[in-house]
Image 1 (cartoon, rainbow, N blue to C red):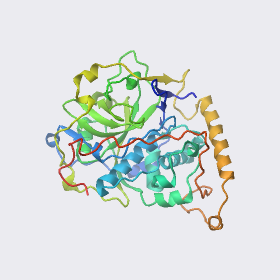
Image 2: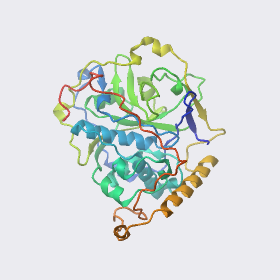
Image 3: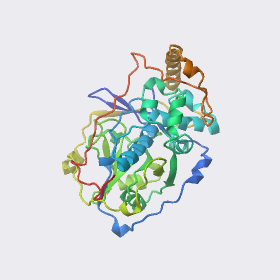
Image 4: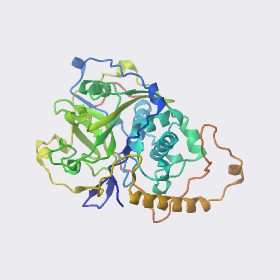
Length: 398
């Protein structure tokens, strides 16, 4: 299959998409609801280290699906739920991914839901305002569901977890550190270089002059920083084998570069999730235990199990151009999705259900089961525990 960019692990032969974060030409009107980010602490009050990893859900694998936007947004919802309740709840990545493309379709008319072509972070955010996000059990992460609209039950459950407040951030280091110090991880879209595949135990170097950049973008979540090292801690969706158990360390200069890093957004409040009290925002420990990344030799270790492969030719991530292989992948999804739907009989109670009025779609009442030959990306185990990483809030999280 040909995509804009693939990360290929030579040891495991697993492939991961790097081109799933699109940039649509027309922006959604609902972005005007974003509130300015207000910091409750000064630059002088910022701690040396903020690390939110103990309150994040298990690292996930998106595999060859272009769902990095859905993975990134869902992980922030999971953070809010775990942080405020102490319980792990997994949210549907494909629910966010589909609705972001559907809302993009309504404005840009690019038929995004017909193919696994990636999504715009901004449309993912406004989809949370309208549709929220359902729990994973209502719309699970199966590859054959990638271009199928979620069920009525999924949309009904998603209304319980709608976006209430969010802010747009700048590429300013101090503002980003203040956001993290107040307990808010944030989304961002980054350009990818071949050094992204190097085995630096998660340390991503600045691109060299001769490196060929990806013309596509990849969505990640920033979950902390280490000021003495001048790096942000990012959460990826390429499984535990990537970086430092699924996490990476991105230089300040990478994030402040407006060409390399764009679309920085902080989700601040979700419906039916307790908000983070203001008095708890700055109570963070000023120490951190890192795994292999604490070894300074790791920065010089440049051998890699991974390669990055770019699409041949001059492909741009625009509304006009899609690869031929994406079209064939579209036919593959349509064929097997329709087979699954045709094999599912509806019960008498389901036949009388009507779709929710707020969802402009044809009703689907059951989740199509995957075919035997459809690979299902695995969800990784817990990557971090508060008992291992002492950089946790002094205050009780719940």
